[in-house]
Image (cartoon, rainbow, N blue to C red):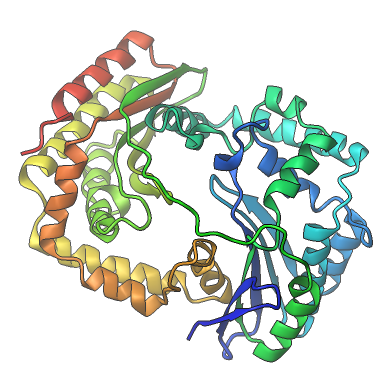
Length: 428
């Protein structure tokens, strides 16, 4: 059972004891990501994620690495569009180590100019390696189209140009604006003693003053816009994404969309995988997925293939989408998909790390903490009729298309025209 506690400075902490586990996972989350970068160089959230590992008042970067290596633990971090997370996985007796280190990283980082210069070089290489990934280029280009005019268009890594504009003064100004204890949350799952955990967290986090008390984040739906993005690149294969309307994370039809996604292209028995990959052999892989944010979402169909197969494969995908729009799904597909979703949730939440991550977003947005049983109830409670409601929303919205590879621009425009003419505003 999830326990919700508060430190002395009212920082929320979610505890999920799993006494049968052998490890404990702890996550420290800050509601700052690329959507908060307006007025600052793009990618600055990601730079800070790197820099907090480069040294504090009491620990060098080597000290941080050595402390975790000596206990056989793991300490990582990530930046997303909406938040930054610092995650640790350790043995129960070593829990004090990451708590001490992360407190130093969040409250006493040095942000040394020489370290920043070195780390910017590392991130430059990361950005250049991204340019070798057609999937990443396509998705970022597509996001720039479907969410244009909103902060969701900012790339997580930033650009080579924006990286050059980040210096220590800019970095510290952004850090001071967002990295306040009043906004941070902590999630712990695994084998631990609750009283000891709370005492450790209070000592290292709860005594830090809150300068900016937390206020519930105001969420405004970002409209899904149609359009297209194309980039010619000399890749072996062409990567294509078709984007349709999708729900945000808290949308009442989110789980109906999850059921539909499984049927369309989310599993190896899905319609798209079986038709395009298994029956026709046009691609090695094809899948659909939901990309849901707090205030926006999309249903994405992704596939990579030889340029010579693009037109035929896309026409077959279009036929499957038209069939889905006009005929819907069967009761048998509905029941099978629900069972698959429930099984996936149970399999994906077996470890302390899974449970720890499960509560992070709910904590950040001060929502009711959902357990695995709560999620299963939401799936079970999704009616067959709700799938029809989702289909109407999908096909009452515009369509977006992106492609990266050796395709000719004229062919791309022709494919986009066929897709948009067939699907936009044609719900039956």
